[in-house]
Length: 164
Image 1 (cartoon, helix red, strand yellow):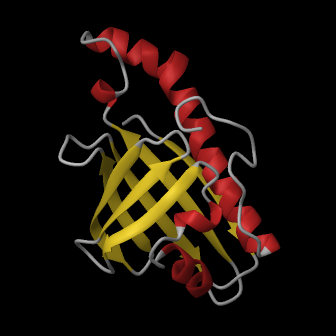
Image 2 (spheres, rainbow, N blue to C red):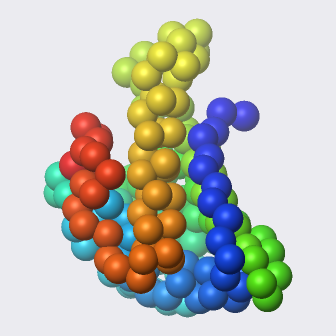
């Protein structure tokens, strides 16, 4: 399976990280490409929220699995095919924890090619590096927010051509 992921460890309890990622509108605290993040239906399985990026693109996140270690969601434009499956996973105990975010893209929506071979080539050459850069920025923002207790500024860790 083709995916990208980023992970950070913290000297904070698992419950602390879970409380943050399960708060409605949480991406507005630490997502460097987030212009607006609003819960539509919250919390638990069946949750829905809307993320507007700095460039004006708006995506809907549909949560289908909400569990003691985080949640799983699909993200995509409203009323259209979902672009990716995303897992937010918190592990740890009362003293230390980690957050891992994994993005499993539906390649056909990222590649301009219909040919599977060309889709795979485009994955390795362009799509994977772009998605990795994106998720690295998000996890950097989360780390900054947790460690500094300050909101992340737009494009704080650099711009991204897909979302800035």
